[in-house]
Length: 233
View 1: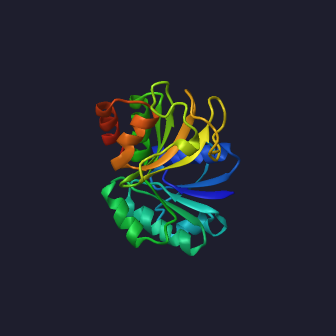
View 2 (view 1 turned 120 degrees about the vertical axis):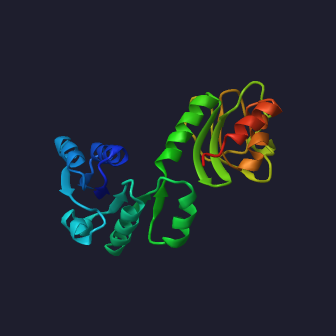
View 3 (view 1 turned 90 degrees about the vertical axis):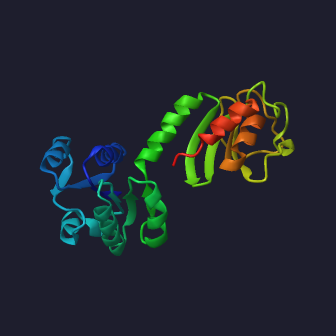
């Protein structure tokens, strides 16, 4: 596949490297000469200039690109570039840096396929390290929804239950299940929940505390504290 990445900063250049390592063709647009030189030194095709200009995007090959990643720290550049990319039929990904702006852009930028917030993704990783091995946040879906992976412990109230016997709060749903040491798969209602098994759950933040108590066996105070830290906003 062919990609155009706007911005050769920390986020953009790292994304470009990952895509190239997977065998994709990547062109980088960067207006800062120093950053552009760094990208060239790493073997990327670089177009120097403002990524929100259509002529520059055409020079970078937007008409043949499968997707455009507008990953600069400038929201106006990212938004404009995505509008142009959409016009050329490319999938568009726009970076934002301030969480409160996400709702605004999601509401008014239907042409943007995906909005990403790198600081949120980094915070999820930090939170996982803090929570330890039995609870892992996978993604924040919305202001009130999170996907988490929880590992059943010996102290969990549901240890020994089957999937069909598991009764989660109304605002929580099991998405996947994996026996200890095995890949995640669609839940089988007859499988039992045992120490080391994993459940992937979509849950409202309001019920995360209850979900943690059931599946991990946390005491109510700790579960409530962890659930309160659940949203990365």
